[in-house]
Amino acid sequence: MKTIRLVGYTFGGLSAVYAGYYTVLYLTRWEWQRALISAALLIIIEIFLATVLLLTRLSRLEGRLEQSDARIEEVRKRLEQTRDPIPNHFNWLRSSDLTDVNGNRTFVFVPVLMVAGAALSGIALVIQKVAGATARPGAERRLAGRLAALTAPPLTATAPLESRPAAPPARTGRKALAVAAAVGGLLLVPLLWSALADATQTRAEQPPDAASTTMVFRVETYGDRSDRAVQLAATDLWETCRRSTAATNDDATLNRMNDGVYTGVIRPALPSHDVTRLRGCLQDANTNRTSAVVLGEGQAEHRS
Image 1 (cartoon, rainbow, N blue to C red):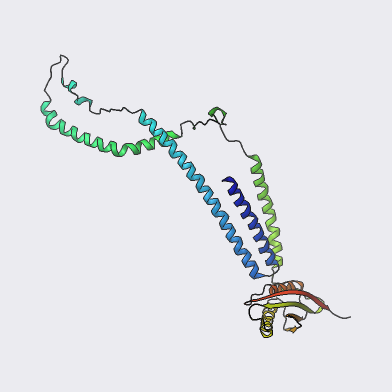
Image 2: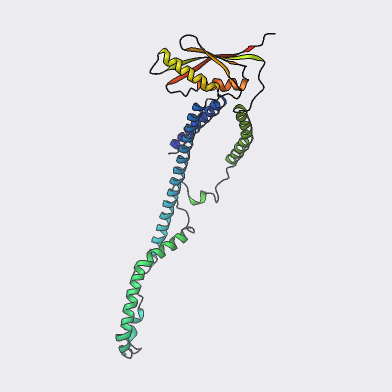
């Protein structure tokens, strides 16, 4: 059982790291559709790990409750063994109590015993029987539950009571590892946050010293692969992605080459961050049944 749980934790942890890595990678590349898929996968894996952890804790809690119930039941049985097997709650009604020291029977209280005493004793007997049948199991179980903490732990053949430590040994290695992981995480989070924020920033940047930006990409369609369908898909993708940049790019043209390859030119040239956004948008094509692959990019320098 421990091996299966360890394998599950290892598989889930590696899958979470894998999904988290690609989520951050796609975010830095501005490939939002793939980043959303990776993030959704990461959430599913986290829910899986949380569910496995909760089921493990519930299983341990159930085992402890079963052990506690077994101990309480054992103590209750011991209490039953110490009980008088034939209780006599009305010893004063025995016939020997109605005789004097000389052996003569006295009937001084006969009218009282026959009329009032017998009636009251019968009622008391009924009440005692009902109370004993209803209250005794619960009371004894509560008493056994209180006494279970005072009983010695169950002995086993492999681990006698004398060999057990009074307190479990302290796990210093695990505590040190947890502290080191927490400190490392606290130091790593700001760095990752800063890097991700810088990679996904949307503020305008200083334009480069170039005349234009050129992007060469290939477009493929699924289903209808005619030239008109590919042309419409490429135009729609280019018009959508060129507007995703922060810099103004009103002068943008798209030229068709061959085999579904297109060349897009934007004037003036885009900053490096906008080039990354444009490339990520093209490769993360969200047009229905359309995919694109960027073959190359470049900046046309000013001639001196």
